[in-house]
Amino acid sequence: MKKTSLILAFLICLVACKDKEKENNTTEPVSEETQESPVVYVSNYPLYYFAEEIGGEAIDLRFPASGETDPSGWVAGAETILNMQQADLVIINGATFEKWRNNVTLEEANILNTTQGLDDRLLPLGEKFTHSHGEGGEHTHEGTASITWLDLELAIAQAEKVKNAFQELLPGKREEFQQNFQDLKQSLTDLDSNYDKLEVDPEKFQLIYSHPVYQYLQNAYSLKGESLHWEPGDAWNKDKKHEIEHLAKKGKKTYLIWEDEPAKETKEGLEEMGVHSIVVNPVFGQPENLDFQEVIFKNLQNLQKIKE
Image 1 (cartoon, one colour):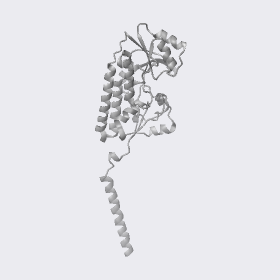
Image 2 (cartoon, one colour):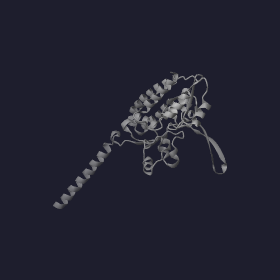
Image 3 (cartoon, helix red, strand yellow):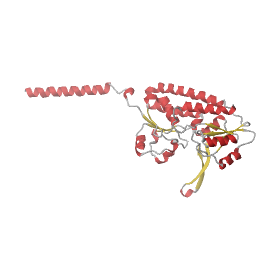
Image 4 (cartoon, helix red, strand yellow):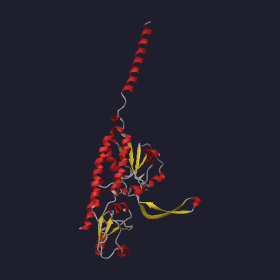
């Protein structure tokens, strides 16, 4: 009888504990604050900057190509690909920027293409390529220019897509993300307004670009010019001198826009020909000691020297 009483008491206690556990599970749901931060991958530095400014500490932000000078040519390792496939969101630039996408399979539903829907604002690369489709023969296409963020209005549109995606991931932080975006938008709008004031007179000044990567800068701020295929570290030689002699127009003050500071010999050789060098960083990779807006502002200051 005593043994039966002990068993009965044990069963009553067990049922009571189960009921208590069930009650705790139904009446105390996990709050958004206690959930793990969504894991978000980004493909380039401008997107990383936008995502960081908007998402703050609420987002577990990852930029695997951060060590690359040009993240468009980044090659993903097997472990990184696996992690990207398991991420909550992968943010890409689109406009043919991510060459690695040809070799990486990702769930389309988890990809945010920040230039999707902006096709009417995308620009041609200025270079054509030919390829074939089986028996269909060869076709010639003109590539798409991908350094979209140099047009700050486009940069704002891309940042807004990031904000919208974060609001879907964490609805409870909707207002916080909105405010962060508005702050970022205001700063970029101010920069855009200052770029609009450059007003470089094409009758007095000639611009030459060291590389065809400035299409959006040229189009947005009336800074038209022809492009070379020069690297900042290239040595000065007679071929380069001949190219400049062919391009430079008499009666105009000529400026060559570089991605980075050119070699001293090249800079001096250009100066002897009356061509002045200016650095406008296209912000391919993550800059040292400066953030995105600081680089864009420094570019502005360098371009303002044209009218001096």
